[in-house]
Image (cartoon, protein in one colour):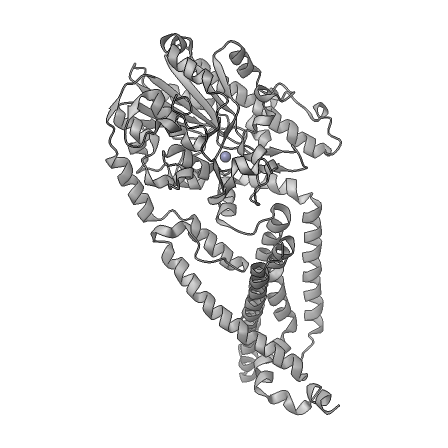
Amino acid sequence: MESLKRWCYRPGMAGSTFSRLLKPIGEHPGFFLFAAIVPTFPDILYAVSREMTFFVWRNLILALLLSLFRAYLLTLPLCLQRHRHANGGGSTAWQIIRTGYISAILLILGVASYAESFLQIHFGTLCSASVLQVLWETNAQESSEFLKTYCASTSFILLTIFFALIVAGYVVLRKHAPKFRFRNRAVRTTLAILLLIGLGISVSRIQIFCKLLLAEHDTPAIEAPSTPISTFERIHTALAANNFSPERAERLLQILDSARVEGCSFRSPCIVVVIGESFNKHHSSLYGYPLETNPRMEERRNRGELFVFNDVISPANLTTSVLNQIFSPASLDAGEHWDEKPLFPALFRKAGYATYHMDNQAAGTVTNFHDLGLKNLFNSRSNPLLFTAVNTLRHPSDLNLIDDYDRIVPKTDSAELTIFHLIGQHLHYRDRFPADEAHFSPEDYDRPDLNARQKQILADYDNATRYNDRVVDAILEHFARRDAIVIYLSDHGEEMFDYRVHFGRTYTPLTAGICKYQFEIPFLIWMSDSYRSNHPEIVEQVARAINRRFSSDDLPHLLMDLAGIQCPWYDPTRSLVNDRFDNTRPRPLLLGYEPAGDYDVLIRE
Ligand SMILES: [Zn+2]
């Protein structure tokens, strides 16, 4: 009974050290609670969505303690006001500063938590370098479509209601302005100890931030030094990891400049690479989709001009990440980093090819890039080493790239490599085809599991795919009278309500379904009439290769093989059509920029 008394209310203890320490909390309990609890929602959501391993528990507890201490620090400035006020004068100005401070802090904490909670609930991911890259890849118009699409989802509405209740709770608490004096010694001691532990953790986290700051200008900039906990650490880590350091960029320029080619047979005098965008091959009639999404390509296949490859995947499901890989002869399965080897257009230039880039994503000023990540590959310093000429503007329709080509490329017979990089079927799908080219409508889909809006998205995607068929057909037609070979591939796939009610791409651990719809890509080789009659041996090689297992990561080796380029970076066992092609290699995948497993293992699970 005596010991119980000791743990209970004792008015004499109010002036103790702990009591003074906890005074700011007692004076501003509403602010403190909001600042302590709200930022931890994403961490809690993340933890409950995982298997509760030791590390998940540990990180959650660290996040809670960090947040508690941060809330305490943020509450301290509110206590300054009382002293100033007691001195008299300036109270109105203080009131304004105080209100501004409270509003700014609560808004920043609330919005950051809300946004990251949404990411976690809807995409199963917290803020990461990949998420930031996706934001870069998304222009304002797409963002509004994205919001329109997701604002109607149940999880979004529930989350919004939840946050509205939190804000309402805060307003009520503030109105009644209760004060706590922490007279219960157990509560007081526990809270004070937790705060002190929070202080210790905060100090230990400072060295992680220092490491990150230094890492931004160092080689391993891509690697984050530790698992970030809390939204703010994750944003900081993501920004640092996303940064392609000036040193890396400089080294890549040197590699491009110093690359040497030993010889070239120019066996294919005109090579065209068409890089598509977000093309789910299971929505192509070339690959058995029941709707006529690729009628022109089907005709070309039936005429024997076009070869359709059946087992090709992309190494990643993020445009920038894929393009890094497919422009570089470095191979993921060999553990090589893409910026260690000269990108293939530089090798073609050195070999004597004129190289052209008609790009509907990277063209424009730096701020006008569709995807800022592409700036690492294509910029004012790298372009002269890679290309003879490039287009300078993006267009609403990929067809306009052909006009760019006609305007920019001189009509000569010199050996030529041209790359068309399309916007293809990138979200927002409805903007990817002219309204009068719409062919499919929601009525074409017998999908009782989808609502009208989802069926419309599906129809928009298939219409964009059918329009892409027209674009690719026009490019092929443009080279029909040349001794030309054209390779079409998509950068990656795109989920389109294929096996669950979901569309787009995800940044969650890979499953067989995600591998199939987001990583399997259409891969086509077309050869003009004169090419087929001039190079019967290549036609046979291509025909023999259509069922081989290939990752577009090794595209440069196929292109160098077709050109007959001899150099240290060419490996015939990686060229899809070469008789020495190694069909047994593992095909590693990246989720964003991070290793995420092997396609051939994951797809069987
Ligand atoms: Zn893409």
